[in-house]
Image (cartoon, rainbow, N blue to C red):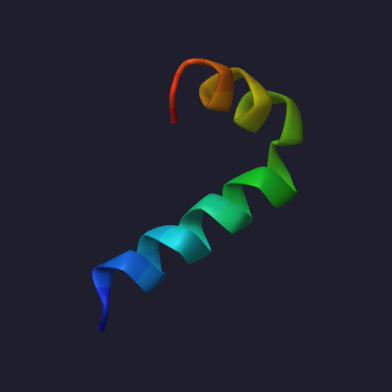
Length: 30
C-alpha cells in the first residue's frame, strides 16, 4: 500500500467525522 494514499484517506475520514477538530488541526499546520 502507498502510505501517502493511506494518510490521505485517514485525513479525509478524520475531516468527515470531526470537521471542527480538523479545522483546528489544519490551523496548527496539519
